[in-house]
Length: 227
Length: 205
View 1 (cartoon, rainbow over the protein chains, first blue to last red):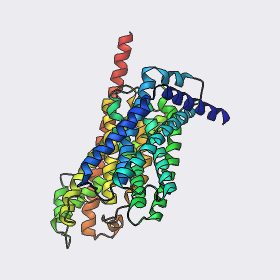
View 2: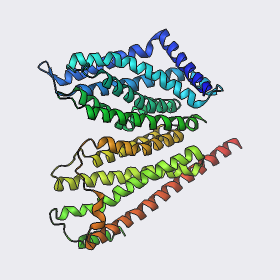
View 3: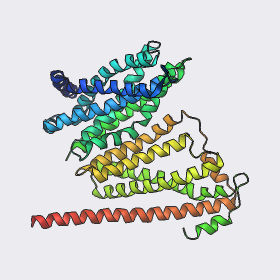
């Protein structure tokens, strides 16, 4: 178990160090997510007033788009440098590699959320500070669910042809439950009369999805990544 | 059996409020059931392929996934035709409709992956189908946030015999069609794999 955690931690460290040298994925993804939100603003804000209850949806859509981009870029970098192959050849547990990649992805997406959420609050007058902990919980649980599937699929697709198109095609239908629960829960917190029980139900369900997705991904990562 | 089905359906009595349109039901429900069965077969076969390393399981997985897409199309086309008359709308964002649509999308994505994924896509597809299968209950619960309009399945055993008989007849016909198409498709996949193996051994010789 300690060995497992150590390998995972080493992979996280490696990913973060590579990223901190160039800031390639963070900066591009961050800028992309800001432009996505702006495009939504131009589509949905009329006469200076945003349409009702759209903030939650925009937040999650922007997250899904940027998440896909970040996943694609991270694994493309691994592929170009042939480092993923090296990782897989290392005498380490495959599931530990997966956990490391997943944790690195989570750090990245949480950074992006830290910018996205205030931006949405600013542009769409969403009450982001009303229930800060519930909102953070929903975002974190949703991000884990999204990245659990995303990391597995992006890793699988590294060797496939036309992977750029295939990643969102595979990922979006699969993460529909995460999206629905995330949007519903966040909307319940943002609406004029907040519905806390609904948000709590969504959070619990998201955690349940996370547990199943991560378990299943750990289980399939080994056979899928072996030639 | 499919050729006789129209006459048998014609013989069934009209439903009191919906009239003629209700007869779509005899095609709609069997294909919907087979859509789910095909999805189930694809998921289980993929799991066997992934963990048991049985190549034949992969042929069944591809065949079942194609069947799922075909019967899914039949379900998704006959559904709105009926809904237009019964509910007055082509499409309702109801739990069952939405889940079927998402499940159908997952299998279309699976086929796209198999078609364009290049080498190694069989394993990726297996992982994907496995996730799709596990995802079904989540999709259903999460989509249930909307109110359900669709009739409960408990209506089937209580149908009068004159309506029940054509339904079971159609279900059997569709089931046989499903089995025939699927085993043909799996056979095709097997032949293709054998030809490829032959080519490879020819190249090496």
